[in-house]
Length: 542
Image (cartoon, rainbow, N blue to C red):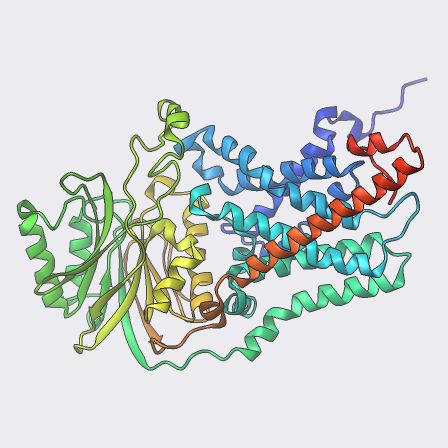
């Protein structure tokens, strides 16, 4: 008699069947919601498998560890395109910052796991889960978004960049409110599918899921766009892969704006070049000829030109400058403030400097600028055009665009160079951030990239044009600009959503601590020998 064929699950190595490895995979799958695949609908329910793995852990400690693995998988997948640049640094970042998901895991385990054997979650606990678990996820995102910890990338809410009706939430509470809403929907689904014996909890879960899904369209309907007080035509120059850090192609494409040909008839108010489009310092006398050439182009095209240079001022370190050039010379500049971890500086270089020997991590740390400020451009009719200019990675930071808006910017401009990551998901993920910044600030946003992607979005985050990584040329777009004084609720109230999440998380942690102490006190008074097991992290019926 032949032996029965082993099941498919049995053929999988035991270590791959570990819940922790499954959590790692569950976290990685979430990145499919971002470009280039753009399976954004997955964000509304894609966190459910990870939550189920966490809530089925035997202890709160194990639930936190599974959340750690989930977060690590999420970051590894989100930053996979950085492997050629920093090598094992990607794994190091994932392992270290995955720790930030532990409070999320403990909260999910504590509130979603049925109490005791055969117990049922009550409606009060279900309501608490709908508030606390998304708050703990948001706490994680906000903490890892600080520049000192590397800065934000793949914030969950950005996955909805293609949907202006959902992005309307960003105008109310920033990208943070979108993240909170997505996680809330996932928690609601978990409540529905795991608490079927409680009709009231199922009703609570269904109502919460429907409310989460409908909140974006409701916000879109209730927040009318600011009226356009003027129009401006912006030309973005994308030379493509033919050059890197050389101005010739940008000069040639800009020259075409004033000549007969395919671009005849275009009359831009501002011309924007990509990041590092000039390798020289226009402020130095030896590069006067190049500055004179750009001034002449500005005169011929009837528009000021925003270029970007890599420069090393005397006595200072390497910096990146956005420089606004008019027919009469340099009008102003902005120095990049938020630098790319490992690409432009290495955090804790003394400890992590060894990465330069096995990867393309920055050989020296660049010098950050003093912060965001406006550049006062002038349109072709001679009217002031206040613009907020930021450089590349800075599009990931909501606060920088908000500062420029508070100072009176009518347009947000990003300059980018992502040639190192050509052919990966990185440039597309980067370009999608502009849509979220537009919705948050109520300002049109454009991004000019050296090799792609160059994009334009209107004040509600609706895509107007997109020149991808394979393209080159000049992208022109006509934009309606709001009044400098117009500000969204997010502009006015700032990061109240993550601060609220911090408060909720702290209160929840205090309540959990008090509850555990109460249980331990009762059991100690009753002489229960299992109290020590509870302290050790073993499961105790609640």
